[in-house]
Image (cartoon, rainbow over all chains, first blue to last red; front, side, top):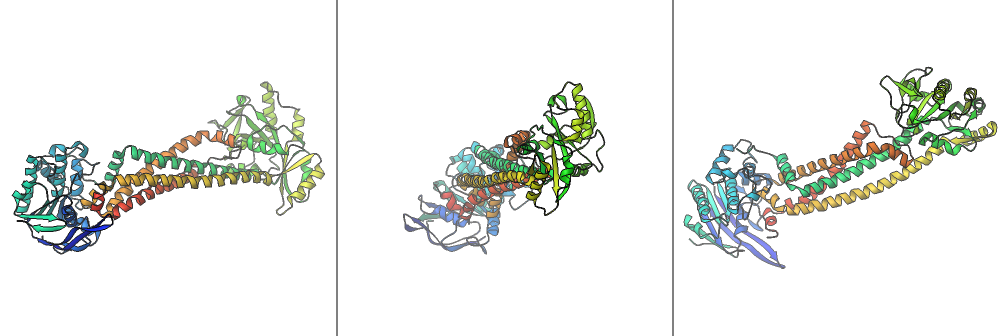
Length: 221
Length: 407
């Protein structure tokens, strides 16, 4: 799946002054590519990845997944696409607090597909080492466990694109390796992976490294 | 595995369950709203229905009593006060000769029999009437039985307990009850209607039991009545007829039934107006409070809604989860409020009746169901509308912008 990013920008106002969080970015990302985007806090990398996920509208420009324009269109169509084709791992803790681990993953799995996915949920949970936690609620999990549940939820529908915003931010080195290995495998199997990270380990997994600074994206390797 | 897949209803249910104090507060607030709405409606409806029943039951345009007893008549009819005043039976024919008079009948207020004597928790008003001339009681009895009263037969008001074998015990004697009248919410419900011959038999039993509070001899009872009920020709001038009766019949007072009922009606209208204003203010206050509570909850749950969007829920689906939560809370609250109002109102309706000194008839099952459904609809709608309005803005903003708020 080709991701075509065409001249996107995102403008915000702070103290009555306008500034660009994203400053006219153009980029094509091909199927199976593994991108890592570095940048200081406030450089615009989260804004960028959220525009790619279709949960933030750019002020200008557009993002297309093959022929589907995710930045503009019918909510139902874009929401279904996001559920099936984009595995999104947001920053911070992104689990629904009133649902168990199993329910969090199952909800995403069954939003548009009524077919039972119990086996798939079991497999992904085992793979990420959270199978014992499936009946637990998010409040009872550690930061790292929550993060792995979010990854499991992102992978359950076998999406074509993985977008991860600081996915290893609160993981120990062992869990960081588990998650990054999974991303690498996914990329090798033809999925597109885009990771926004502070983690220097991430750059060992790819040659496509970008830097975000004041909303501008530059390839550094 | 841990469970099965689930939809909107299950997510909403889990959210309500997890909300604890906040959700319980919302449900209690809705329950209070439903309690006052349903309870208030029940009172207004009960009073209207009571007045309606009395108006229909009285059936007469004029009531003639001994001079100076006019003020007592509404107390006797509506509040169960004892009335011991008598007129000469011959006055009935005299009144019937008055121009414009259509029907005339006499009634005999025997006494308020003590509760200890009879099958009743409260004193019973025994009212004798003349089946040959009666036009007031008969239409009501004929709704229940299609024949004239037998000798000894008794018709009872709605508040008197009827034994399994359809009899009533008065001073150790059992009398067959042939009909029980509908509720009016007045002392009519605590009355026994029978012929004067039966009243004489009841009196004999009472004397045997040592109750000697009935004055006069049997002959006097036969020749006496307590009031004369008059129905006039349609379009007649009530005032003129009243004056004519007073001048022909001598020491009597003529009471216009409508003016007595109109006084009650005007009190009822004041209560209705008060309730209406109170209900509007209360509903406005309840919906504002609900809106504020829901708004605060929505604010706290912004991130949760955004997470739902993030995994691919449409805005409509997120709103449907919130809508389902609101409806469930609304239903739980209004049903709790209705049940509480019902449990509170029903046992206290008799006391309420005494305290307000107005006719009060508890609505029947269809009336209660209708009022209940109306209250459930209004309170659930209020809660749902307030909740949806408060949540709407969250779902119309960009998901990521909401998630970043407060960071």
